[in-house]
Image: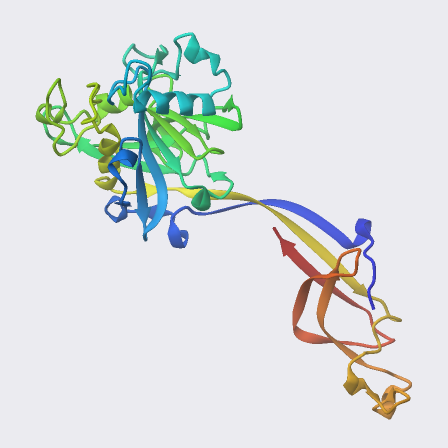
Length: 354
């Protein structure tokens, strides 16, 4: 017997937000030493690096420069890879793409011009999350990234970053909110954005755009490792930009190493789920007979047990949900059967989560 739901009384729909650890297996925190790089061709590495855990891609790291520095210019009419990357991500994340044509770009209070003064970012490091891991979005106000490198004297230095979503209202982006990336941990701000902003966080896109100016000031690397014209990029233990126009430059690798040498990354995914509760009601006069062959006997379909003639008994062990075409869509099985007869009613709640 198929019975139609009364949608006003028998169904409830609820939307919930579920967060889980971002990394494979549901881990919320991962040591930097557990993060590896995938095998890529030389051409691919000129654009990005893939960071993996358990042999699965989790992040992509790249570097963009507004003027194309930090990469080789292909020819007089073709821009370098870093310029293409900068334009692609800026047009993707910012509402007014015409800014680039007007000489503008990402504008942040990176500390180079003092507090409360925005500076157009010529160079940016970009971290892009893997969609399979982040689900609908990255969970704001809970993440921490520890970067490790060295100061200008060669001494060990570290930088801990988070977002300020717990304290500052979001700016709007084409597909969701934009928060500031600041020094701090798990959403607890150490230095406010109007003193120094390390980047922008786009949780719905799974993107972190980091100011190369701000990172360079905090983790420049020792002088011998800070690339100058014709200099060496050995060890990559700092985040000072290499702005030479040559294919030998590899800024994205610097951020990759800073993450791998850091104490760890804490990150959570976020997913919107819809919960549908269906209340399947069996009234006293319903579902007291069965089509099971063990219920009947003989060609006349008489009840097999004579004591059921006046008081038939059934046991509800599962509930099926059907569409308007009577096609079975879902089956809910009970942990133990429910005894049903003409003197009892039963309600079975079936929950579906999408």
